Length: 99
Image: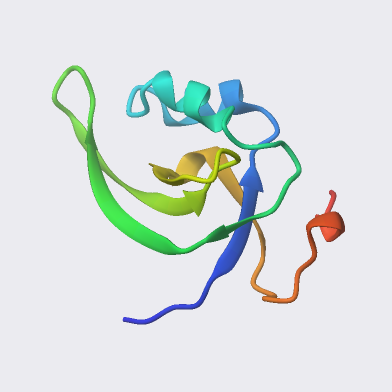
C-alpha cells in the first residue's frame, strides 16, 4: 500500500486524549506531545501499526506517526495525540484550520 503525506496538529487537550485512550497510552506520551507546538501543522511521513499492551495484559490495536519534532528529530509517536488537519501538500503553516 502506498500513501501520500498528510498533515496533523497536536490535540488541544492532551490530558483528555490520554483519558480517552487510557489505560493503553502511557502518561509519558503526554510529555512527548509537548515536543510539538500547539496549532502548528506537522507532516505525517509514515504510519506504523502497533499493538499496545496495558498493565493488566489487555491489548488494543493502534498506530504511530513518524513526524518531525521542533528539535529537528523524527519521532514515532502515538497517533491518538494528534488530530487530522489536511492532505494539501501546499498547506502553509499559517493556514491551520480552526474549529
